[in-house]
Image: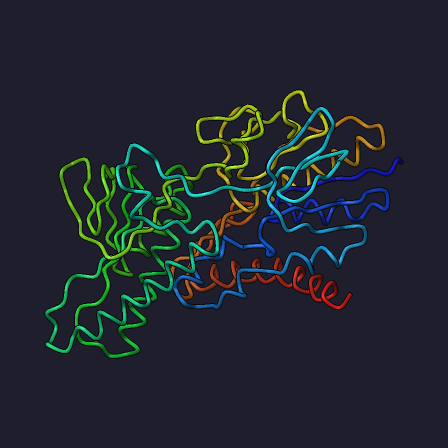
Length: 397
């Protein structure tokens, strides 16, 4: 087998999984490029913003992690262009030649332009600075609210609005409500607490998911006191006020928008085919069309199954994509044909505030409550413990 160099843009779920698979081959050298020196576990951000864990819980040092592997280099920089004719990518400070390229730069919060004021007045949580900014502002405002009670309970309503009731929106709404309830109980504050509103344009939360998950999540949200507004489209967001298309308005202190994702801004500069939200169009082998040595995986792609049905972006999808891109690169080196990507969902686990969850396991097994919470945390622990052990090795080198 010939020796080749693989460049991987992005140190997220998919990029790291590709490194793990490719690094097992002694014929492959790898360069990982990411503008951040850490791997961000965005799937667990709800715990962070609800103050259950600190920042280290959702990040792992990328230089140490890459150093733990043989023949893997990490470059902390931002890719600015890719010259496909010469197989060279450029960052802000250097150029890197590659034989194979995997693009895995993930996504960013999609703020639709048709919702006036959304981008200016809502928070996203697709990256650590955004999540940290929200967390700090929220806690500061919470303290201000407590201090304002010097004249009794004549204080303004404190509403948190979550726009979008997909997986992220439901998890964040549940955890914020559980956090608010715990905060007021622990401090024995007698005045009105925090109200959490989950607003979505569809007729149900978790639209398109299994009915068991929808019912379990809705039941839990109501028990936590979350106000769930279905069939409500946000038409405008002003400073501290939301306007809905049915004429209703709602004052708020903070708003988090989870109503959609767009591909990372890198796709705007590559010249590859994309959809309206910037997601790269890929072939069934996860290649960029007409570029057999370039792969794209995870949230940056428009992923579809064999029937052409859209596959929702998840960490699981990114990891399976990373594995498959690595598999096809190794098969190409052996002169074997590439295999088409077939995604089989291995189950869904949803955190629903406090020590409670709901999920579907392989085989259609349904779980909810404390057991589901333990399973979800066990999956996360299994994933992170392996990476932390590796990064500890790299730190010592």
